Image (cartoon, rainbow, N blue to C red; front, side, top):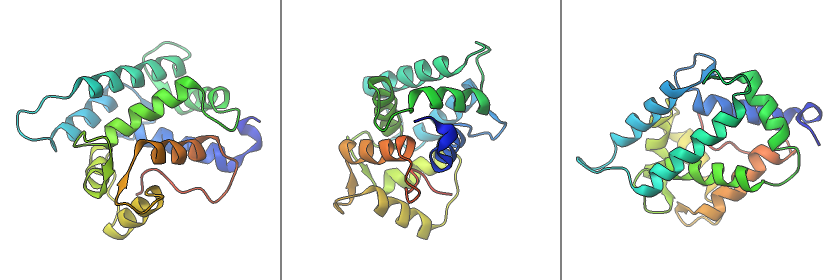
Length: 179
């Protein structure tokens, strides 16, 4: 199934684009990644360097965006993004590359790098991604991601939510970030 037949799926994929276009200029480029990395790093303890896992996640994200950059101008427009999503998320599951990208996205949301997203990580991630939701919206978004109600979003929980977000035609799918 392609995105042209699924308005809810396409709308969520446009939302995913907005998560990474943090300076809201209509394209995803290096400046967006720098902003996310700098903001997220500001929440780490003073002097803490990104882990090798975080650096690997950055390489995976760059690889994904290079594939979406069909004209190789180092800028991914919304049109390029949607064309890439139409190919990448044509089915109802995640390809191995899409799962690798989701894992990399999870790592950027796990601000304290403890292999789970707790409410603090979730709140800080919103700041890193340039979002400014209300506290109520943050709590609601976090509860929706925390499927088992443990107070932490594990990688398997996140992958399930991510897959539903990008590859489902359902209309009642919650977001990954809010605001």
